[in-house]
Image 1: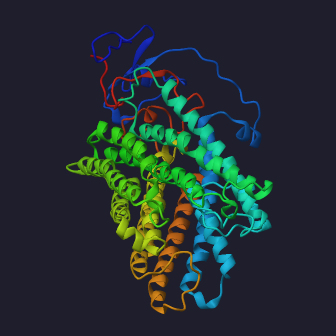
Image 2: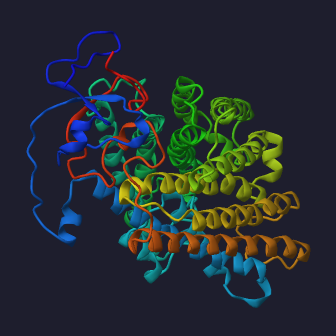
Length: 547
């Protein structure tokens, strides 16, 4: 086999070999432990390192193997199933809220039930995780404070139910889990890259996950500590947040939003990485401005800690602080805009293929832009004072945070599920899912802008004083049910194509992509790669390293 050379002309260290994807010898004598090549690599060669490593046997089989596994692929599957379960739970809570607002006179929900429903909906959707501790609050009395759990609403005096304690405890446990998971990601990206995989060669998705992990490590402790202090107030009689005992009424808001606004980017930055992976593949051209996108993610991470006070413009903070944080809020739109223009530059002039993943990725740009524009409005102090706590804010947060992240999640699912399962999802059902979801999202949340401009406050279950709001609320509720129909189509697509095995075989690289995960089998073997790949560029499957 020929010796591989690096891009500088120096031979790769001893042990490196070139694997020819189209050589007749490899076709005649396939090796079970070889990582097969995709047809889209045009006969180019990828360098690998041959190393002997032990293949450990699983300690258990069946359910116990899944519970005790350290295989990152299986852990990822566990995350997917659990988060999707909580997504469905949060979605059902949202449908109950929307049904109540569409028919407020029927008394579907009482005021207490409505407050509990939107509180648990917000907590579930923001964290996309619940767990036994958090959801056991439904048994002993769920909290009715909103997902922000503002003090004094969350103190024992105003929320005496034990469900409030369980929710705080659940979020505290979730905080520790998130910190440990983020540290794992950081260590993995820094220390377990393939040979030759420099930081300017890792995928943009990895860049976004790296920044997200640092945000979690830096921001999540504030929520975790705040939750512990609030538990002490509720259960031990301390007065960290007890305003009646002389505590600062804004302390909880400062601690919560120092975590809460980076949390917005914790949710959306991985989505940015997904879009940066999907668009080049289905545009058939390299990403436009790789380094600009990577560095803009870092800039967003830094700036996200300097904008949290815009959530408190109506809380009576110093006007000088308001001006500073208004400027910083406007500034964070710059690196975000860099990404939008880079994505548009990638699409421009490309040979576009409108697969389902591409449809979701392109729709995300539209949805996120709408949410971003409304966010710039809310970053202005005079506008925010008028629109704070109205449905305009609800519309903004759903366009940016919830629906924006979901479009990215669905794009990622349709893009990587063939690699995970070895089968393609149905494109017909996928397109039906996309169009229903796109229509439903805009029907559900765009009218909320007008409701906010008309002064409808959020967190209200009845509006007898303003019957003119009923029409737009009905439209929003119809949109919510269309979203539910889209999710049912998505579930059936997964069951039909993957679980029942009716999807077409995907092959190793069905999209003719050029990043490293497509160089191995679909689904990957437990050992991932039979030989360790040596990387010479950001597009390792399109490079010819034998030069």
